[in-house]
Every structure is written in structure tokens, then in C-alpha cells.
Length: 560
Image (tube, rainbow, N blue to C red; front, side, top):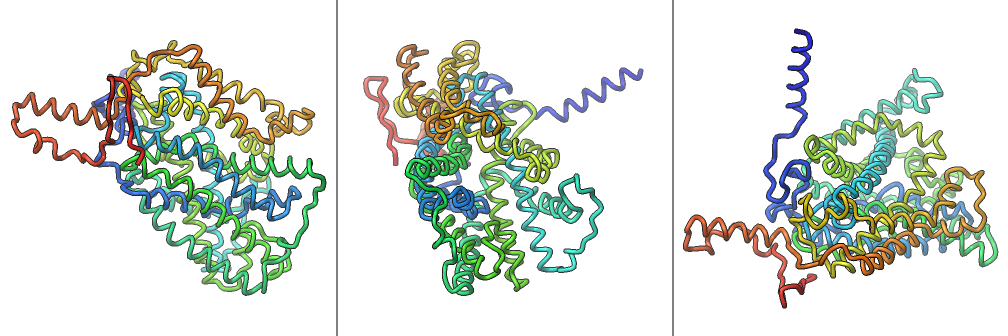
């Protein structure tokens, strides 16, 4: 009897956990798709023009990490000019794979976990998805903690007595009771936005695009006026000498900039798939270097000026700078702006990405809403305050992880643009376990050979970053350009392997809009409707990418 009741409870629990069966137009079962993994239908492509892409990247650029990006470079011994050059050039380079993989997302209207089935196989892409999801969860927790520090400054501005909030936690906890309370408050503020449908989240980016630049410019004007100049950083000479040493330090700084957005160079398609047309995504090539460089320069100027204003040295951390403000109103509103900035970045760069990855690995259990909730809750398990304060080796591992993401991005670019001649992908086959993207037992070995080779060349430097006592000699210099060399190796080697051992004929591109229109016309014919034009009028024909097929296998695509 007890076993029977337990069995009934388990059956009821299982029924509540498993998502309601979704009849996909593409996948034969829920093992390979759900509503969030299916291609985005025309009526949900709400990023209707480049403005929303611009808002997305301005929202992502105006963050605490971008503000203080130059600090580590200057601490390394570079001048501010060299650091700023690394920021400009680094973001100009990383914009290339972001544009290319973003265009493919807008062209196919599928997410990162789905499009990687073409390059790594329908089972082989699981490692790629998990690698991205792992980073998203950890950095999501860290960003939540950073946001909670902004909340602390907001509360301090309203109630200065909060500074004396009693602490009941031991020093080993690496956080105070006040800090834990602020983390909880920020977590609860963030949660409703995390659960918001992706097609509606664009308005958060629009609001942040308005609020954050206003707050930033206000702080810049205040800093220049209060300091009477730009401060000591602009007159500070470099502390390393010799062309070779300066060059390698600069390349290491460039690599850190590239690694900063190595994640989105892979999964930017999670967002651009909501674009009305692929041409809307090319604006990223301009807005990424412009937005990040502008905000990085403002961070250098204000941080440098802070040394004159407060006599406490250069305050690179904006939350520490805010804490020095005399005006409680200024302290609150600037802290609010940075809290909003962190919120937008955390959702765009981490939570949504992790949710898509959960959905891809467990499509019967997780949709984006559930995945976002789990990714947010895991922030507590990750104890980010402990990671930031004690786990230096783990942080070094996380920061070096870009040498794994580099070849993944390279393989994706190579597969879509070179191997498949600009996206000649059959969208239906991305959901077919018996189709052309199944390869060998679900694995495309070409993608993994390229990935491993891109990573293995950086392995000695990777180990040295995690455990500095491991001496690797000159191999460390290879790691100093780790993302760049791993990306190029992945891109070129995958193309060569495919040319030597092609898996299948490339064939024609079959896009979701072709399938929707074809199914609509078929339904009309089955119903015997004479006026086909009226029957298909509900399809937004402007969203259908114009294609011209010649000789049955050559596809011409309109890029704009």
C-alpha cells in the first residue's frame, strides 16, 4: 500500500514536471524540440529594425565590467593609450564572429543549441551547449552579486544607518548579513524580468539604453568639473619597457578583451533569431566597437579623476566610487543606473543563454521560462561572493575558458559561411534524428577535431593560468593570443576536413518561411479554397527572405 501511494505520487510529480506535449512542425518527437527550440515564427520576430540590435549592444556595453576593463591592463604596466587601443581593436575583432553568427541566427531563426547540430551533430552538440551553459550559470551568479552591491549603495543612500546593520555571519562566509540581504533583494528584483518572454525583453534594453548613457554622462561631467582635469592616469607612464615585453603585454590585454565576449560570439543567435530580417544584424559591426570603446574611455577618465577628487588612489570599481559621493540623491540614482545595467547584461549574456541550453539538453522538462528560473536559483548554490573572494584559481579557469569557446565560434562560422556557401542548411533536418545532420551516431567528428586542435595548442598556457607554479616556458606566449588562434584554427581546420572528407551533399537551403508558406498553400489546396491570396495573407511576406534558385542547387540570398 505504501509503495502504491509512493508510485502514485511519483506519477503525479512526473506529470507536473514533464512539459505538455508540443506538436512541433519540425521535430518527430519532444526529444528534439519544444516550443522554444522550434524556429521563431514570423509573428514573434519582434526585433523589427536595427534599432533594437543597437539598444541590445548599448545595454550590454554600459556595465561595470566595461567601465573597469582598462584597470587590469594599466595594472599590467600599459599606458592608458595602449589599453584604450586594445579595447577598440579587441571589440572590432570580436564583432566579426558576432556579426557572422548573428546573421545566421536571424537567417535561420533558430537558437544556438539548434544551429550547432549542423556543425557538431545532433548529439555531439551537447558538449558545446553544456560548455556555454556552464559559463552562463557561473557568470550569472557573479553578475547578480555585483548587482546586489549596487542595491547596497542605493539602500545606504536612503538609510545611512544601514551601514551599521548587525552582522551575524562568520568571517569564513566571505559575506556579511547586510550583503546577503542585498543579494536577496536584487535576486527578487531580477526574477520577474528573468521570467519575461524573450520577445518582450527588448523594452528592457531600450530603457537601459536611455537611462545608462544619461547617468554616465552626468558622472563624467561631474568628474571633470570636480577634478579640474582628467587626473593622473593620463600622465602615468607605462611600467614595462622594451618592445617585446610591451607587445606581449598588449596582446595579452587584447586577448582578455576578446575573451570577454567569446560567449556571445557563439550564441548571439539566441537573440538575433528574433530579428525580422538578417540585414538588421550588420549594425553590430559598428555599434560593438563604438559603444564599448566609448564607455571604456569614460571609465578611464572618471576613475583617473577620482584620484584627484578623493585622494584615495584611482577608484576603478564604480560601486566604490559611488560610495564616496556626498550627495545621497546622486548616490541613489547612479547606483540605480548601474543596477539596471547589470540586470540587462545578466539577462542577455547569461540567464537567457543558460535557459536555451537547459531547453536543448532536456526539452521535455525545460522551456526557456523554467530554464531561466533554474539558472537564477543556481546563483545561490554558486555562492558568487565566495568565488570572488577566495577562488582565484577557479576565476582564472573561468577567464581562460575562451580558448574552448574560440574554436566553437570558428567551427560555426566555417560551417555556415564556407562549407555551406552562406547557409545552405535544411532547417527541417536540424530536428530529424535520421537526417543528414546525424553524421556518425549523432557526432560530427570534423567539428570535434577542429575544436580539440584549437584548444590543445593553448593547453600549456591554460594550465599555467590556473596553477601558476606550472612552468610552460615560451608556450605562454601562444596563450596570450589564445582566443584568436583557437578561433582561426577551428575555422580553417573544419573547412579543410570537410573538403577532404565531406559528410554529405550540401544541397539547397530550406528555410522556415519556405516551409510555413508551403504548408499554408498545401492546406489551402486541401480545403479547396480558390482565393489562395487571401488565405495566405496572414503570413508576413516581408519576413520571407527573397531567394532565387538556379539550376536547382544554387541559392542566392539577399543580405539586406
